Length: 123
View 1 (cartoon, rainbow, N blue to C red):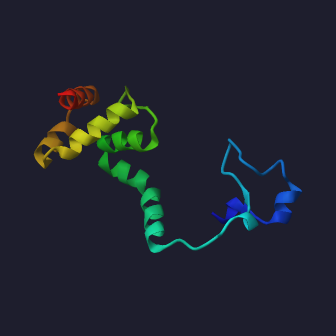
View 2: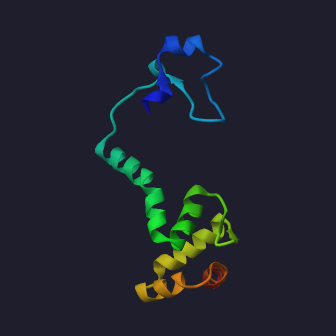
């Protein structure tokens, strides 16, 4: 995080290098921002977010659906393109199932998982 903030002198030396860049993290002048240590809750939230890829990997296919929801970006899950809306419905249905039915749902092919979840959600 400290790499995002530079001194006013360093910022003035290379104005074309800093600023809002579409290619990476933005760099800001340190004197324009209040820099404070994270609270315990903020630190826990940051740690939780950084651990998200590990949680998704541990959950297997359902973790892939959770990744699509979190990143708001479609992806192919086992060669089936899944958008964020469909993934959200699958995750919501999965979370409401009891453990026995969750296991059955995990064993279904991705396209059938999506079809069943959308059918259940639409009534």
